[in-house]
Length: 576
Image 1 (tube, rainbow, N blue to C red):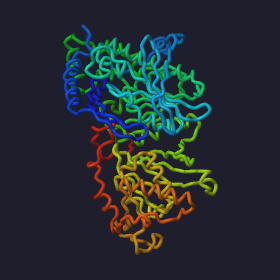
Image 2 (image 1 turned 90 degrees about the vertical axis):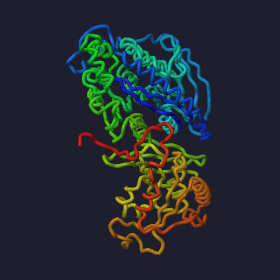
Image 3 (image 1 turned 180 degrees about the horizontal axis):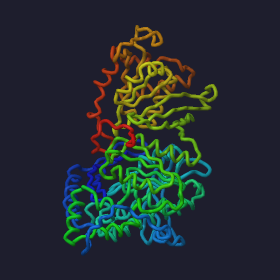
Image 4 (image 1 turned 135 degrees about the vertical axis):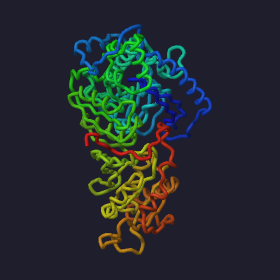
Protein backbone atom coordinates (compact mmCIF):
# COMPACT_ATOMS: atom_id res chain seq x y z
CA UNK A 1 0.00 0.00 0.00
CA UNK A 2 1.01 3.59 -0.53
CA UNK A 3 0.28 6.23 2.10
CA UNK A 4 0.18 9.85 1.03
CA UNK A 5 -1.51 13.09 1.94
CA UNK A 6 -3.45 14.63 -0.89
CA UNK A 7 -4.30 18.29 -1.30
CA UNK A 8 -5.92 19.27 -4.56
CA UNK A 9 -6.15 22.65 -6.24
CA UNK A 10 -7.52 23.22 -9.71
CA UNK A 11 -6.41 26.02 -11.95
CA UNK A 12 -8.35 25.59 -15.16
CA UNK A 13 -7.08 22.34 -16.59
CA UNK A 14 -4.42 21.83 -13.94
CA UNK A 15 -4.81 19.62 -10.92
CA UNK A 16 -2.38 20.13 -8.07
CA UNK A 17 -2.11 17.17 -5.76
CA UNK A 18 0.27 17.83 -2.91
CA UNK A 19 1.27 14.39 -1.78
CA UNK A 20 3.44 13.27 1.10
CA UNK A 21 4.28 9.61 0.97
CA UNK A 22 4.43 7.85 4.25
CA UNK A 23 5.21 4.48 2.72
CA UNK A 24 3.76 1.12 1.95
CA UNK A 25 5.00 -2.22 3.20
CA UNK A 26 7.19 -4.58 1.22
CA UNK A 27 5.72 -6.74 -1.52
CA UNK A 28 5.29 -9.47 1.06
CA UNK A 29 3.30 -7.24 3.41
CA UNK A 30 6.17 -6.37 5.74
CA UNK A 31 6.38 -3.73 8.41
CA UNK A 32 5.17 -0.25 7.41
CA UNK A 33 7.64 2.61 7.66
CA UNK A 34 6.55 6.19 8.22
CA UNK A 35 8.09 9.59 7.86
CA UNK A 36 7.56 12.62 10.04
CA UNK A 37 4.10 14.20 9.95
CA UNK A 38 5.54 17.48 11.11
CA UNK A 39 7.97 17.66 8.21
CA UNK A 40 5.17 16.70 5.81
CA UNK A 41 2.85 19.44 7.08
CA UNK A 42 5.55 22.12 6.86
CA UNK A 43 6.47 21.12 3.29
CA UNK A 44 2.83 21.13 2.26
CA UNK A 45 2.28 24.59 3.79
CA UNK A 46 5.29 26.05 1.99
CA UNK A 47 4.12 24.42 -1.23
CA UNK A 48 0.65 25.90 -0.95
CA UNK A 49 1.99 29.40 -0.35
CA UNK A 50 4.44 29.35 -3.24
CA UNK A 51 2.18 27.58 -5.71
CA UNK A 52 -0.67 29.93 -4.87
CA UNK A 53 1.56 32.79 -5.99
CA UNK A 54 2.65 30.96 -9.14
CA UNK A 55 -0.91 30.09 -10.08
CA UNK A 56 -1.79 33.77 -10.18
CA UNK A 57 0.50 34.27 -13.19
CA UNK A 58 0.16 30.95 -15.03
CA UNK A 59 -1.32 31.16 -18.53
CA UNK A 60 -0.58 34.91 -18.63
CA UNK A 61 0.84 36.38 -21.82
CA UNK A 62 1.67 40.02 -22.45
CA UNK A 63 -1.45 41.32 -24.20
CA UNK A 64 -4.68 40.25 -25.82
CA UNK A 65 -8.39 39.75 -25.30
CA UNK A 66 -10.69 36.95 -24.21
CA UNK A 67 -12.16 34.52 -26.68
CA UNK A 68 -15.91 34.06 -26.66
CA UNK A 69 -15.85 30.68 -28.40
CA UNK A 70 -16.16 27.65 -26.08
CA UNK A 71 -15.68 25.08 -28.83
CA UNK A 72 -12.66 22.80 -28.77
CA UNK A 73 -11.16 22.61 -32.28
CA UNK A 74 -10.08 19.21 -33.55
CA UNK A 75 -6.46 19.22 -34.67
CA UNK A 76 -5.49 17.97 -38.11
CA UNK A 77 -4.17 14.38 -37.86
CA UNK A 78 -0.97 15.21 -39.70
CA UNK A 79 -0.25 17.99 -37.21
CA UNK A 80 -0.67 15.53 -34.35
CA UNK A 81 1.68 13.02 -35.96
CA UNK A 82 4.30 15.69 -36.60
CA UNK A 83 4.07 17.27 -33.14
CA UNK A 84 4.54 13.95 -31.33
CA UNK A 85 7.17 12.54 -33.67
CA UNK A 86 10.60 11.56 -32.35
CA UNK A 87 13.75 9.81 -33.49
CA UNK A 88 13.10 6.16 -32.76
CA UNK A 89 16.63 5.26 -33.83
CA UNK A 90 18.16 6.96 -30.82
CA UNK A 91 19.51 4.34 -28.36
CA UNK A 92 17.44 3.69 -25.25
CA UNK A 93 20.51 2.78 -23.17
CA UNK A 94 18.14 0.80 -20.98
CA UNK A 95 19.30 -0.66 -17.69
CA UNK A 96 17.22 -3.18 -15.72
CA UNK A 97 17.91 -3.94 -12.05
CA UNK A 98 16.05 -6.53 -9.95
CA UNK A 99 14.71 -4.99 -6.73
CA UNK A 100 12.38 -7.59 -5.21
CA UNK A 101 10.10 -10.49 -6.02
CA UNK A 102 7.18 -12.51 -4.69
CA UNK A 103 5.40 -15.65 -5.83
CA UNK A 104 3.65 -13.81 -8.69
CA UNK A 105 6.18 -11.43 -10.21
CA UNK A 106 9.62 -9.85 -10.13
CA UNK A 107 9.94 -6.13 -9.65
CA UNK A 108 12.73 -4.25 -11.42
CA UNK A 109 13.98 -0.70 -11.69
CA UNK A 110 14.32 0.41 -15.30
CA UNK A 111 16.16 3.47 -16.58
CA UNK A 112 16.16 4.54 -20.21
CA UNK A 113 16.90 7.61 -22.32
CA UNK A 114 14.20 9.78 -23.88
CA UNK A 115 14.92 13.04 -25.68
CA UNK A 116 18.26 13.26 -23.87
CA UNK A 117 16.78 12.82 -20.39
CA UNK A 118 16.91 9.77 -18.12
CA UNK A 119 13.52 8.26 -17.30
CA UNK A 120 13.11 6.14 -14.18
CA UNK A 121 10.47 3.43 -14.10
CA UNK A 122 9.30 0.47 -12.05
CA UNK A 123 8.73 -2.73 -14.00
CA UNK A 124 6.61 -5.67 -12.80
CA UNK A 125 7.22 -8.87 -14.74
CA UNK A 126 5.00 -11.90 -14.04
CA UNK A 127 6.66 -15.27 -13.48
CA UNK A 128 5.12 -16.82 -16.56
CA UNK A 129 6.39 -18.50 -19.68
CA UNK A 130 5.56 -17.50 -23.21
CA UNK A 131 4.48 -14.13 -24.59
CA UNK A 132 2.62 -11.97 -22.08
CA UNK A 133 0.48 -8.82 -22.47
CA UNK A 134 1.79 -5.57 -21.01
CA UNK A 135 0.49 -2.26 -19.68
CA UNK A 136 2.05 1.16 -19.19
CA UNK A 137 0.63 2.88 -16.09
CA UNK A 138 1.08 6.60 -15.38
CA UNK A 139 0.84 8.29 -11.98
CA UNK A 140 -0.95 11.54 -11.11
CA UNK A 141 0.15 15.13 -10.61
CA UNK A 142 2.78 16.08 -8.03
CA UNK A 143 3.35 12.47 -7.02
CA UNK A 144 6.26 12.20 -4.61
CA UNK A 145 6.33 8.40 -4.71
CA UNK A 146 7.36 6.32 -7.69
CA UNK A 147 4.88 3.71 -6.44
CA UNK A 148 1.80 5.92 -6.76
CA UNK A 149 0.32 3.63 -9.43
CA UNK A 150 1.31 0.55 -7.45
CA UNK A 151 -2.31 -0.49 -6.75
CA UNK A 152 -3.10 -1.21 -10.38
CA UNK A 153 0.40 -2.52 -11.15
CA UNK A 154 0.34 -5.09 -8.34
CA UNK A 155 -3.24 -6.12 -9.16
CA UNK A 156 -2.50 -6.61 -12.87
CA UNK A 157 0.91 -8.27 -12.40
CA UNK A 158 -0.63 -10.90 -10.11
CA UNK A 159 -2.94 -11.73 -12.99
CA UNK A 160 -0.27 -12.15 -15.65
CA UNK A 161 0.27 -8.64 -17.07
CA UNK A 162 3.68 -7.02 -17.28
CA UNK A 163 3.35 -3.45 -15.99
CA UNK A 164 5.73 -0.55 -16.59
CA UNK A 165 5.38 2.63 -14.49
CA UNK A 166 7.56 5.51 -15.78
CA UNK A 167 7.89 8.78 -13.86
CA UNK A 168 6.57 11.89 -15.58
CA UNK A 169 8.87 14.86 -16.31
CA UNK A 170 10.02 16.78 -13.22
CA UNK A 171 8.58 14.11 -10.91
CA UNK A 172 10.49 11.91 -8.47
CA UNK A 173 14.13 11.51 -9.46
CA UNK A 174 13.51 13.50 -12.64
CA UNK A 175 13.30 16.75 -10.69
CA UNK A 176 15.37 19.57 -12.20
CA UNK A 177 16.74 22.19 -9.83
CA UNK A 178 14.67 23.58 -6.97
CA UNK A 179 11.04 22.51 -6.69
CA UNK A 180 8.73 23.01 -3.72
CA UNK A 181 7.09 19.73 -4.61
CA UNK A 182 7.70 16.95 -7.10
CA UNK A 183 6.48 17.78 -10.61
CA UNK A 184 5.92 21.48 -9.99
CA UNK A 185 7.84 22.59 -13.07
CA UNK A 186 5.80 20.40 -15.39
CA UNK A 187 2.66 22.53 -15.05
CA UNK A 188 3.56 25.72 -13.17
CA UNK A 189 4.95 27.48 -16.22
CA UNK A 190 3.87 29.62 -19.20
CA UNK A 191 1.56 27.89 -21.72
CA UNK A 192 4.32 27.16 -24.23
CA UNK A 193 6.48 25.45 -21.59
CA UNK A 194 3.48 23.46 -20.30
CA UNK A 195 2.73 22.33 -23.85
CA UNK A 196 6.32 21.20 -24.39
CA UNK A 197 6.33 19.35 -21.05
CA UNK A 198 3.21 17.41 -22.05
CA UNK A 199 4.83 16.54 -25.37
CA UNK A 200 7.94 15.32 -23.56
CA UNK A 201 5.74 13.16 -21.31
CA UNK A 202 4.10 11.57 -24.36
CA UNK A 203 7.47 10.89 -25.99
CA UNK A 204 8.68 9.33 -22.72
CA UNK A 205 5.76 6.91 -22.82
CA UNK A 206 6.35 6.09 -26.48
CA UNK A 207 9.98 5.31 -25.64
CA UNK A 208 8.70 3.08 -22.83
CA UNK A 209 6.63 1.31 -25.48
CA UNK A 210 9.76 0.92 -27.63
CA UNK A 211 11.45 -0.82 -24.70
CA UNK A 212 8.51 -3.14 -24.01
CA UNK A 213 8.37 -4.19 -27.65
CA UNK A 214 12.07 -5.11 -27.45
CA UNK A 215 11.36 -7.65 -24.69
CA UNK A 216 11.37 -11.25 -25.88
CA UNK A 217 8.57 -12.27 -23.52
CA UNK A 218 6.22 -9.32 -24.23
CA UNK A 219 3.62 -9.65 -26.98
CA UNK A 220 3.88 -6.45 -29.09
CA UNK A 221 0.29 -6.96 -30.28
CA UNK A 222 -1.06 -6.82 -26.72
CA UNK A 223 0.29 -3.65 -25.13
CA UNK A 224 -2.05 -1.13 -23.50
CA UNK A 225 -1.84 2.16 -21.62
CA UNK A 226 -3.59 3.55 -18.55
CA UNK A 227 -3.18 6.43 -16.15
CA UNK A 228 -4.89 8.41 -13.41
CA UNK A 229 -5.69 12.15 -13.38
CA UNK A 230 -2.70 13.91 -14.99
CA UNK A 231 -1.50 10.42 -15.92
CA UNK A 232 -4.91 9.85 -17.48
CA UNK A 233 -4.49 12.93 -19.66
CA UNK A 234 -0.99 11.89 -20.74
CA UNK A 235 -2.18 8.35 -21.46
CA UNK A 236 -5.03 9.72 -23.62
CA UNK A 237 -2.58 11.83 -25.62
CA UNK A 238 -0.12 8.94 -25.97
CA UNK A 239 -2.84 6.54 -27.03
CA UNK A 240 -3.98 8.92 -29.76
CA UNK A 241 -0.42 9.62 -30.90
CA UNK A 242 0.78 6.01 -31.15
CA UNK A 243 -1.15 3.30 -33.03
CA UNK A 244 0.90 0.51 -31.44
CA UNK A 245 -1.22 0.63 -28.28
CA UNK A 246 -4.15 -1.76 -28.63
CA UNK A 247 -6.38 -0.01 -26.12
CA UNK A 248 -6.42 2.42 -23.22
CA UNK A 249 -8.02 2.99 -19.82
CA UNK A 250 -8.22 6.55 -18.53
CA UNK A 251 -9.01 7.15 -14.86
CA UNK A 252 -10.48 10.44 -13.56
CA UNK A 253 -9.32 12.43 -16.59
CA UNK A 254 -10.95 14.65 -19.19
CA UNK A 255 -10.25 17.51 -21.57
CA UNK A 256 -11.54 20.71 -23.14
CA UNK A 257 -9.06 23.43 -22.19
CA UNK A 258 -10.86 26.19 -24.05
CA UNK A 259 -14.15 25.48 -22.30
CA UNK A 260 -12.42 25.58 -18.93
CA UNK A 261 -10.67 28.87 -19.58
CA UNK A 262 -13.85 30.50 -20.88
CA UNK A 263 -16.47 29.08 -18.51
CA UNK A 264 -14.88 27.65 -15.36
CA UNK A 265 -16.10 29.06 -12.02
CA UNK A 266 -12.76 28.30 -10.42
CA UNK A 267 -11.66 31.53 -8.63
CA UNK A 268 -8.20 31.50 -10.22
CA UNK A 269 -9.63 31.08 -13.71
CA UNK A 270 -12.21 33.80 -13.03
CA UNK A 271 -9.39 36.14 -12.01
CA UNK A 272 -7.55 35.17 -15.19
CA UNK A 273 -10.60 36.18 -17.24
CA UNK A 274 -10.65 39.47 -15.36
CA UNK A 275 -7.01 40.03 -16.35
CA UNK A 276 -7.92 39.30 -19.95
CA UNK A 277 -10.51 42.08 -19.93
CA UNK A 278 -7.87 44.66 -19.08
CA UNK A 279 -5.46 43.34 -21.68
CA UNK A 280 -2.96 41.61 -19.39
CA UNK A 281 -3.87 38.03 -20.28
CA UNK A 282 -5.06 36.33 -23.44
CA UNK A 283 -7.42 33.38 -23.04
CA UNK A 284 -7.55 32.64 -26.76
CA UNK A 285 -3.78 32.54 -27.09
CA UNK A 286 -3.40 30.29 -24.02
CA UNK A 287 -6.07 27.90 -25.28
CA UNK A 288 -4.57 27.82 -28.77
CA UNK A 289 -1.10 27.11 -27.38
CA UNK A 290 -2.42 24.15 -25.40
CA UNK A 291 -4.59 22.70 -28.17
CA UNK A 292 -2.04 20.07 -29.19
CA UNK A 293 -1.91 18.71 -25.62
CA UNK A 294 -5.66 18.84 -25.02
CA UNK A 295 -7.12 15.29 -25.08
CA UNK A 296 -10.42 16.70 -26.32
CA UNK A 297 -8.74 18.38 -29.30
CA UNK A 298 -6.89 15.40 -30.74
CA UNK A 299 -8.67 13.15 -33.26
CA UNK A 300 -8.88 9.41 -32.82
CA UNK A 301 -6.66 8.71 -35.82
CA UNK A 302 -6.35 4.96 -35.21
CA UNK A 303 -9.62 3.88 -33.51
CA UNK A 304 -9.20 1.27 -30.77
CA UNK A 305 -11.33 0.43 -27.71
CA UNK A 306 -10.91 2.70 -24.68
CA UNK A 307 -12.44 2.80 -21.21
CA UNK A 308 -12.97 5.91 -19.08
CA UNK A 309 -13.61 5.73 -15.32
CA UNK A 310 -14.85 8.95 -13.74
CA UNK A 311 -16.70 10.37 -10.76
CA UNK A 312 -19.90 12.39 -11.13
CA UNK A 313 -18.89 14.56 -8.14
CA UNK A 314 -15.37 15.24 -9.47
CA UNK A 315 -14.60 18.98 -9.50
CA UNK A 316 -11.18 18.41 -11.06
CA UNK A 317 -12.66 16.85 -14.20
CA UNK A 318 -16.44 17.40 -14.10
CA UNK A 319 -18.88 15.51 -16.28
CA UNK A 320 -18.88 17.92 -19.22
CA UNK A 321 -15.07 17.82 -19.52
CA UNK A 322 -15.11 14.03 -19.43
CA UNK A 323 -17.80 13.80 -22.08
CA UNK A 324 -15.98 16.29 -24.29
CA UNK A 325 -12.92 14.03 -24.30
CA UNK A 326 -15.00 10.85 -24.66
CA UNK A 327 -16.78 12.19 -27.74
CA UNK A 328 -13.49 12.31 -29.64
CA UNK A 329 -13.01 8.52 -29.40
CA UNK A 330 -14.69 6.16 -31.85
CA UNK A 331 -15.10 3.38 -29.30
CA UNK A 332 -15.23 4.68 -25.73
CA UNK A 333 -16.96 3.00 -22.81
CA UNK A 334 -17.65 5.11 -19.71
CA UNK A 335 -18.13 3.81 -16.17
CA UNK A 336 -19.31 6.37 -13.61
CA UNK A 337 -19.23 6.27 -9.85
CA UNK A 338 -20.94 8.68 -7.48
CA UNK A 339 -17.56 9.79 -6.22
CA UNK A 340 -15.17 12.72 -6.22
CA UNK A 341 -11.72 12.73 -7.82
CA UNK A 342 -11.09 9.84 -5.41
CA UNK A 343 -12.51 7.09 -7.60
CA UNK A 344 -13.23 3.75 -5.85
CA UNK A 345 -9.90 1.95 -6.09
CA UNK A 346 -11.23 -1.50 -5.19
CA UNK A 347 -13.77 -1.56 -8.01
CA UNK A 348 -11.54 0.33 -10.43
CA UNK A 349 -8.78 -2.27 -10.20
CA UNK A 350 -11.12 -5.05 -11.30
CA UNK A 351 -12.70 -3.04 -14.11
CA UNK A 352 -9.33 -1.96 -15.53
CA UNK A 353 -7.88 -5.47 -15.37
CA UNK A 354 -11.07 -7.01 -16.81
CA UNK A 355 -11.20 -4.58 -19.73
CA UNK A 356 -7.56 -5.17 -20.64
CA UNK A 357 -7.83 -8.94 -20.23
CA UNK A 358 -10.77 -9.00 -22.65
CA UNK A 359 -8.79 -7.00 -25.19
CA UNK A 360 -5.83 -9.35 -24.69
CA UNK A 361 -8.02 -12.43 -25.06
CA UNK A 362 -6.93 -13.97 -21.76
CA UNK A 363 -8.99 -14.93 -18.70
CA UNK A 364 -8.74 -12.87 -15.54
CA UNK A 365 -7.18 -15.30 -13.12
CA UNK A 366 -4.38 -15.78 -10.62
CA UNK A 367 -2.71 -18.59 -8.73
CA UNK A 368 -3.18 -17.99 -5.04
CA UNK A 369 -0.95 -20.48 -3.29
CA UNK A 370 1.80 -23.03 -3.61
CA UNK A 371 -0.94 -25.68 -3.76
CA UNK A 372 -1.75 -24.54 -7.28
CA UNK A 373 -5.25 -23.20 -6.58
CA UNK A 374 -6.24 -20.86 -9.42
CA UNK A 375 -9.02 -18.30 -9.06
CA UNK A 376 -10.81 -17.24 -12.23
CA UNK A 377 -12.63 -13.92 -11.89
CA UNK A 378 -15.62 -12.87 -13.98
CA UNK A 379 -16.36 -9.21 -13.40
CA UNK A 380 -20.05 -8.34 -13.64
CA UNK A 381 -21.27 -5.03 -15.04
CA UNK A 382 -21.61 -2.23 -12.47
CA UNK A 383 -25.21 -1.53 -11.50
CA UNK A 384 -26.17 2.13 -10.87
CA UNK A 385 -27.03 2.58 -7.20
CA UNK A 386 -25.05 -0.48 -6.06
CA UNK A 387 -22.34 0.06 -3.45
CA UNK A 388 -20.35 -2.96 -4.62
CA UNK A 389 -18.74 -4.46 -7.68
CA UNK A 390 -19.64 -8.12 -8.07
CA UNK A 391 -17.25 -10.83 -9.22
CA UNK A 392 -18.15 -14.44 -9.95
CA UNK A 393 -15.34 -16.70 -8.72
CA UNK A 394 -14.37 -20.21 -9.69
CA UNK A 395 -11.35 -21.84 -8.07
CA UNK A 396 -9.75 -24.94 -9.53
CA UNK A 397 -6.91 -27.18 -8.44
CA UNK A 398 -5.60 -30.39 -9.91
CA UNK A 399 -3.62 -31.04 -6.73
CA UNK A 400 -6.66 -31.03 -4.41
CA UNK A 401 -8.21 -34.15 -5.87
CA UNK A 402 -11.55 -32.39 -6.49
CA UNK A 403 -14.09 -33.59 -9.03
CA UNK A 404 -13.49 -31.81 -12.34
CA UNK A 405 -10.72 -29.88 -10.61
CA UNK A 406 -13.26 -27.49 -9.00
CA UNK A 407 -12.06 -26.24 -5.63
CA UNK A 408 -14.86 -23.77 -4.91
CA UNK A 409 -17.32 -21.28 -6.38
CA UNK A 410 -18.86 -18.11 -5.06
CA UNK A 411 -19.83 -14.51 -5.73
CA UNK A 412 -17.85 -11.69 -4.17
CA UNK A 413 -19.14 -8.12 -3.87
CA UNK A 414 -16.27 -5.79 -3.02
CA UNK A 415 -17.32 -2.65 -1.18
CA UNK A 416 -16.55 0.49 -3.20
CA UNK A 417 -15.71 2.85 -0.36
CA UNK A 418 -11.97 3.57 -0.19
CA UNK A 419 -11.57 1.87 3.18
CA UNK A 420 -10.95 -1.77 4.11
CA UNK A 421 -14.39 -2.51 5.51
CA UNK A 422 -15.17 -5.98 6.95
CA UNK A 423 -16.36 -8.85 4.77
CA UNK A 424 -19.59 -10.76 5.40
CA UNK A 425 -19.49 -14.47 4.55
CA UNK A 426 -23.03 -15.67 3.91
CA UNK A 427 -24.32 -19.08 2.69
CA UNK A 428 -26.16 -18.86 -0.60
CA UNK A 429 -29.50 -19.95 0.87
CA UNK A 430 -29.48 -17.05 3.35
CA UNK A 431 -28.33 -14.61 0.68
CA UNK A 432 -31.10 -15.55 -1.72
CA UNK A 433 -33.71 -15.18 1.02
CA UNK A 434 -32.47 -11.89 2.47
CA UNK A 435 -30.31 -10.23 -0.16
CA UNK A 436 -32.02 -6.84 -0.11
CA UNK A 437 -31.61 -6.50 3.64
CA UNK A 438 -28.00 -7.62 3.72
CA UNK A 439 -27.15 -5.18 0.93
CA UNK A 440 -27.87 -2.36 3.40
CA UNK A 441 -24.79 -3.30 5.42
CA UNK A 442 -21.63 -1.25 4.55
CA UNK A 443 -19.29 -4.17 3.94
CA UNK A 444 -17.97 -6.47 1.25
CA UNK A 445 -20.12 -9.59 0.83
CA UNK A 446 -18.92 -13.07 -0.07
CA UNK A 447 -21.66 -15.54 -1.04
CA UNK A 448 -20.55 -19.17 -0.62
CA UNK A 449 -22.29 -22.53 -0.58
CA UNK A 450 -21.74 -23.20 3.12
CA UNK A 451 -19.48 -22.31 6.05
CA UNK A 452 -17.91 -25.76 6.24
CA UNK A 453 -14.13 -26.16 5.99
CA UNK A 454 -13.88 -26.43 2.18
CA UNK A 455 -15.93 -23.32 1.46
CA UNK A 456 -14.29 -21.40 4.30
CA UNK A 457 -10.83 -22.22 2.93
CA UNK A 458 -11.96 -21.09 -0.52
CA UNK A 459 -13.39 -17.76 0.70
CA UNK A 460 -10.70 -16.88 3.23
CA UNK A 461 -7.94 -17.68 0.73
CA UNK A 462 -9.33 -15.09 -1.64
CA UNK A 463 -9.89 -12.49 1.10
CA UNK A 464 -6.28 -12.91 2.21
CA UNK A 465 -5.09 -12.68 -1.39
CA UNK A 466 -6.81 -9.28 -1.67
CA UNK A 467 -5.21 -8.25 1.65
CA UNK A 468 -8.64 -7.54 3.14
CA UNK A 469 -8.34 -9.99 6.02
CA UNK A 470 -7.26 -7.20 8.35
CA UNK A 471 -10.74 -5.73 7.97
CA UNK A 472 -12.17 -8.75 9.78
CA UNK A 473 -14.92 -11.16 8.71
CA UNK A 474 -18.48 -11.77 9.91
CA UNK A 475 -19.70 -15.33 9.22
CA UNK A 476 -23.47 -15.75 9.02
CA UNK A 477 -25.34 -19.01 9.53
CA UNK A 478 -28.92 -20.00 10.08
CA UNK A 479 -29.94 -19.02 13.61
CA UNK A 480 -29.58 -21.91 16.04
CA UNK A 481 -32.90 -23.46 16.98
CA UNK A 482 -34.82 -21.80 14.13
CA UNK A 483 -36.57 -23.44 11.20
CA UNK A 484 -34.91 -23.46 7.79
CA UNK A 485 -35.11 -20.61 5.35
CA UNK A 486 -37.10 -22.76 2.98
CA UNK A 487 -39.68 -23.18 5.72
CA UNK A 488 -40.00 -19.43 6.36
CA UNK A 489 -37.31 -18.70 8.92
CA UNK A 490 -38.68 -15.26 9.85
CA UNK A 491 -40.43 -13.16 7.30
CA UNK A 492 -41.24 -10.19 9.47
CA UNK A 493 -40.36 -6.97 7.59
CA UNK A 494 -36.87 -5.74 8.36
CA UNK A 495 -35.95 -8.76 10.47
CA UNK A 496 -33.24 -11.28 9.72
CA UNK A 497 -32.36 -13.70 12.52
CA UNK A 498 -28.99 -15.38 12.13
CA UNK A 499 -26.08 -16.84 14.00
CA UNK A 500 -23.09 -14.49 13.70
CA UNK A 501 -19.43 -15.37 14.25
CA UNK A 502 -16.91 -12.53 14.23
CA UNK A 503 -13.44 -13.34 12.96
CA UNK A 504 -10.81 -10.83 14.02
CA UNK A 505 -7.78 -10.47 11.70
CA UNK A 506 -5.96 -13.07 13.83
CA UNK A 507 -9.00 -15.36 13.78
CA UNK A 508 -9.08 -15.05 9.99
CA UNK A 509 -5.54 -16.43 9.79
CA UNK A 510 -6.23 -19.26 12.23
CA UNK A 511 -9.53 -20.23 10.61
CA UNK A 512 -8.03 -20.14 7.13
CA UNK A 513 -5.06 -22.29 8.17
CA UNK A 514 -7.21 -24.98 9.84
CA UNK A 515 -9.82 -24.93 7.07
CA UNK A 516 -7.11 -25.41 4.44
CA UNK A 517 -5.54 -28.28 6.38
CA UNK A 518 -8.88 -30.05 6.80
CA UNK A 519 -9.72 -29.46 3.15
CA UNK A 520 -6.42 -30.95 1.98
CA UNK A 521 -7.03 -33.93 4.25
CA UNK A 522 -10.37 -34.63 2.61
CA UNK A 523 -12.61 -33.23 5.39
CA UNK A 524 -14.40 -30.53 3.40
CA UNK A 525 -17.53 -30.66 5.52
CA UNK A 526 -15.91 -30.04 8.91
CA UNK A 527 -17.43 -27.35 11.15
CA UNK A 528 -14.27 -25.33 11.75
CA UNK A 529 -15.99 -22.58 13.74
CA UNK A 530 -17.21 -25.06 16.36
CA UNK A 531 -13.88 -26.88 16.36
CA UNK A 532 -12.08 -23.64 17.17
CA UNK A 533 -14.77 -22.79 19.75
CA UNK A 534 -15.10 -19.31 18.32
CA UNK A 535 -17.87 -17.39 20.07
CA UNK A 536 -21.09 -17.08 18.08
CA UNK A 537 -24.16 -15.02 18.81
CA UNK A 538 -27.81 -15.59 17.89
CA UNK A 539 -29.13 -12.29 16.57
CA UNK A 540 -32.79 -11.49 15.94
CA UNK A 541 -32.06 -8.69 13.47
CA UNK A 542 -28.64 -9.21 11.91
CA UNK A 543 -28.95 -6.21 9.59
CA UNK A 544 -29.28 -3.80 12.50
CA UNK A 545 -26.66 -5.75 14.44
CA UNK A 546 -24.08 -5.37 11.66
CA UNK A 547 -24.91 -1.74 10.91
CA UNK A 548 -24.43 -0.89 14.57
CA UNK A 549 -20.98 -2.49 14.53
CA UNK A 550 -19.69 -1.37 11.13
CA UNK A 551 -19.24 2.39 11.08
CA UNK A 552 -17.41 3.35 7.93
CA UNK A 553 -16.52 6.78 9.30
CA UNK A 554 -14.50 5.08 12.06
CA UNK A 555 -12.43 3.06 9.56
CA UNK A 556 -9.27 4.69 8.23
CA UNK A 557 -9.22 5.34 4.46
CA UNK A 558 -6.85 3.16 2.47
CA UNK A 559 -3.33 4.60 2.76
CA UNK A 560 -3.18 6.05 -0.75
CA UNK A 561 -6.37 8.10 -0.29
CA UNK A 562 -6.22 9.32 3.28
CA UNK A 563 -8.07 12.55 2.48
CA UNK A 564 -11.05 10.80 0.92
CA UNK A 565 -13.91 11.50 3.34
CA UNK A 566 -16.58 9.60 1.39
CA UNK A 567 -18.37 6.92 3.40
CA UNK A 568 -20.81 5.85 0.69
CA UNK A 569 -19.68 5.42 -2.94
CA UNK A 570 -22.00 3.88 -5.52
CA UNK A 571 -22.11 3.25 -9.22
CA UNK A 572 -24.01 5.88 -11.14
CA UNK A 573 -25.24 6.69 -14.61
CA UNK A 574 -25.43 10.48 -15.07
CA UNK A 575 -27.66 9.96 -18.12
CA UNK A 576 -30.44 8.41 -16.03
